[in-house]
Every structure is written in structure tokens, then in C-alpha cells.
Length: 481
Image (cartoon, rainbow, N blue to C red; front, top):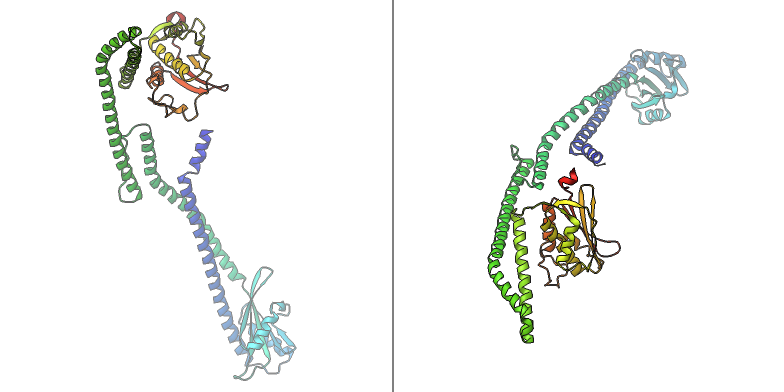
């Protein structure tokens, strides 16, 4: 589906659009030019023919009229029409005098001379013409009154009908010739479009590849700046300048982050020694609190609890510092996962509070201390923030071992789920203090990642949240055998 979508996207990409645009522009231009050329050529050919017919017709009428007696009879009219037609090629000439008519060709179609042309000749008393199309064949009809020595109209009108078939054929040949030229013009436009697309798309593709390399983390990636000062060259220069600024900003942020992490690690390390002394004193005070006055006993127990919390926070900060610096290592050992988790629950007094479904025989090569820390953080959170019953379930299937910790509380709000593993994240901003350090789920996730696994969190359909610790199932040598 994805390949098909990308294929359609490439076929409708910028290259295809450029080619289509070029071809359409070339086609429209060629068709428009062809239409204009055809119209102008046809007009020029017809006007030239029309002028020639009018001139020849007038000359022949003047010459023949000199030998015509008025009023003529039908025989003299016929002879007069034939005399006029002698110099006009294949034109048919019709002479009309009142009700008398004479024609150079008795079989000619006289209906080509329309009544409107006859009326125009009589009313204007000068030569008139009309183009006629009959059964797909063009004709030119010309009519003129005959006058003698600038006198009044004699009543004699002469008409000539000339075929324009030859001129039509000539203009059709011109149209065919121009139309034949459209194909090479369109092909040339397509080739030019491909060349233009290649010139434009090459730097665009380079920009796209550089952008993807940046998205993948290669901030040193740059593009070659095209020669010249066009928009593409400006775009490449802007991209390189932006990449320089981004690389500098990221390097500065990383340096500041590294300094901050080193500071936290150094402070945590420096706090361990005095904190150890404080813990011993607090432990002694807590043990003797029963012999102290009530106020002093409360203060002693508070100091002991806060010191323990501070010690745990320092230990968690140092643990995160080891993950951040890459110093955290796995101490792998082949263990019975069910036994390891039972020890986790027993050590913290959670055996009676948690429903454990831990089938025997799930032996795997793990770091038992880190698995203990990860599961203890998840179970502790479930007991503090969820609701009973809390359950721990182990499943081994395929190449993975999964430890699920579920509770029956209200679950996690949808906007909290993406931030569950963030450091010091508090779902309730009004809650400023908690029993934990705020790093428990983050440390659990880092331990899972150190094993090559992960932790997923979701809300159950029946209520409550479920955390699934998934790590690769590395079997021991005996199991492999």
C-alpha cells in the first residue's frame, strides 16, 4: 500500500507536473497559432481571389457592353453573357434585363445568385458580391449593374458565379501542414520540460536528502550551493546557514546538558559521605525515639524518614548519572525469574499485598539486581498510586519474557500516559511531594533498555493501569541444550 502510494505520488510529482504544464502550454500555443495562421491565410487567399474576380469581371462587362444594343432580347443577352464569361475561366455568367435572362451555361444553377444579391445590386447601383456555401462547396457570386457613358442605370444586371474550391483546397493544405508541425512542437516541448525539470529538481532532491539526514541526526549534512544567484541558489545558502545555526545550537545545548549531568553526578557523589553519617545518626535517633518525649520522638522519626528519602533520591540520581554517562553495565547471570521476583516481593514485605502468578521454570540470563530494581519500582508505584489487588504476572513466549504489573485503580489519564517515564514528572501538579524520588519509572525503563527491552504502559479495559516489562529471553546453556 505504501509503495503504491509513493508510486502514485512520484507519478504526480513535480517532474510530471512540469512536463504536463510545458506540453499544455506548447499545445495551446501551437493550436492558437495554427488557428490564427489558418484564418489569416484563408482571408488573404479569398480576398486575393475576390479582387481578381471583381477586376476581371468589371473589365469583361465593360468590353462586352460596348457591343450590346439596349434594350436587348434574350438571344443578345445570352450572347452577352457568353462574351463576358469568355475571359473569366470556369465562371458562369448570367445577364438579366427585366424579365429576360441569358446565361453562359444554360444548365448552371442560377439559385446561387440570391435575391439579396440582386437587391443589393439594384439599390446600391454598384458592384456587390456574396460568398455562398452550397453542399460543402464555396462559391463567390458577383453582380454589377451595366451603365453606358455615365448615364442612368440601363436596367441590365450581370452576375458571375465562381467556384472557390481551389482556394479552399489551398487553405486546407496550409492547415494540414501546420497541423503536422504540432507533433514535433509538442515533443520538443516535452524534451525541454524534462531538461528544465532536471535542472530544477536536482537541487530540490539534494535539499530533501539533506533534510532527511538532519532528521536522522546528521547535523553536519550540507548541500552543494548551485552556481548563480537564482532562487534555488538562495534556498541552498539559506538551508546551509540554518543548518550551521542549528548544529551550533544543538552542540551548545548538549554541552550544557552534559555539564548539568556532571554537576548532578558530582553533587550526588559528594552528598553520599555526609548523608551516610546523617543516616547513621537518624537511625540511632529513630531506634531511641520510644524513650524520648513525644515531640522529640516525632522530630526524630521525621528526621529519620526524610534522611532515608534523601538517601534514596541521591542513590537514584547517581543511578541516572550512570545511565546518562553510559557507565551502567549488566552483570548477567542465569536465574529463575519467578524466584527472583518472589525475593523482590519478600524483601520489601509485599508478599501479602500482591497477587503473584509466577510459574516455575522460566530461567533466563538477566541482571537480577536490575530486574529487581525495575519490578520493585513498578510494584511500589502500583501500591502507592493504584488500588488493590495488585498483581505480578510472568509470561515467557517466543524470544521475549514479559513481567506485567497491574492494579485495579482508576488508571492513568490519557494526557499522562506519554509522560509516565519522564524524570520528576508529576501527574497532579498540586502534589509537590511523594514517597518516591520521581525517578522510579525512569530508572525502571533504563534498566529494561539496558537489557535490550522496554516497558509499555496502558489502561486496562476493566480499570487500572498495567505496566509490561519486556526483555529478550536469553536462555541458559542447559536450556539451550
